[in-house]
Amino acid sequence: MKTYYNPEDLKKFGTIGELQKSMADKFFAYYSEVFAEGALTAREKSLIALAVAHALQCPYCIDAYTTDTLEKGCDEEQMMEAVHVAAAIRGGASLVHSTQMMSKIKEISM
Amino acid sequence: MKSLKAQLHSLSDPKVEIDVLEQRHPGGSENDFQSYLERIGLFPLRPTSLEIFQVNVGKMCNQTCKHCHVDAGPDRKEIMDRDTMALCLEVIRREQTLNCVDITGGAPEMNPDFRWFVTEIRTIRPEIKLIVRCNLTIILANPKFYDLPQFFKENGVEVVSSLPYFTAIRTDSQRGDGVFGKSLEALKMLNAVGYGVEGSGLILNLVYNPSGAFLPASQTGLENEFKKKLWERFRVMFNSLFTITNIPISRFLDYLINSGNYENYMEKLLASFNPAAAAGVMCRNTISVGWDGFLYDCDFNQMLELKVAAPSTTHLRVWDTDGLSSRPIVINNHCFGCTAGAGSSCGGATL
Image (tube, rainbow over all chains, first blue to last red; front, top):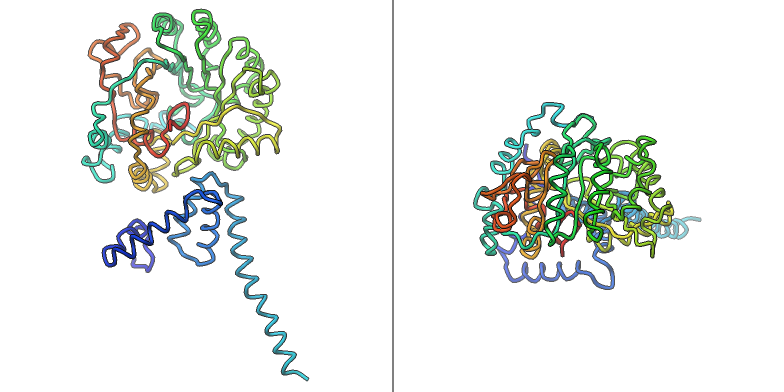
């Protein structure tokens, strides 16, 4: 069955340089620096990535960072809490706009 | 749950396991373990010096863990007898380069001659590091085992115990229902006699291995997390955490194939091949002895029935130090498990 997303494509991520090498090289160098141990631990960064993956609903990223967080020693509870952080921000981002709606209601109502 | 052997499962036959490891290997024979070693000048892999004598005293166990590379369980009857143990003692007495005797199983304590063996080793080599790989729940399995912590203490045994995680859900999913609770109880009994307690000199190390088709986390980071969580939640103490990579043989191989993870897991091991870890694999300073006295390069080769490739000896009856020290170590694609990332050995990460 043909689908838009194929899990095998994730393994080909590194080949994007075939069409634009210098930008891809810069991106991957940047990417690996971002995820290295720094002021945040690699484990904390992996949990952030897992949450962002869910916010963006990127299936490749969800596969990659589910595995990566497990390999960084995170447990299911921590991983699900990270996803709730993403969900809370997404939900909050919608709800906070309701203040604009409320202002507009006031503006055009008697 | 029955062992693969009791189920008459095809993967209880080492020839079938090796066939899977060779025929379904990602990238084929050009990317097999031998070719990886050749590329870094390590083939044939040779021993360094003999330091660890690992004795598998039998496959009988009170647990049937899903990932067990021994395919151990209550239905396994292979047990080392006292005559074979006596041959082990001869080697331990003679080989002065040995600095560690590592007793494993199954649940080694279920061997009727286990206590005799431990006591004899301690008598002939009072200074040697003596490890018992205790699955914890055995201590509570029968009143006759309740005094094991005291027995370990009296014989200066270093206890190494598996605890896949500090939560019941992950531990029980791998080791069986109720194992986490019993393991904690056993850990408290070990703590009570001084094991894992700072300054006691009694060493209690834990083993973490991933509960699935992924690699272990960094040993130091996970050790800190385990220490914090086990103390805060359960008031349990231990010394060090060993992270061990699951090797794709026996029940873990069965799991990988059934869950559709085999190819991806092997690709991950290959992609994580680390030359420094390859140079430090534990088979280079270890001899592994099977329940029937045959000699192997490691416990995994033992389960695959890949005996040492020394022309002069494959059994304790004909121990030949020189022949063993010049042997080529037998390898196959399961060895990628020990060379991935920070390396893996019975003592945890190697780097």
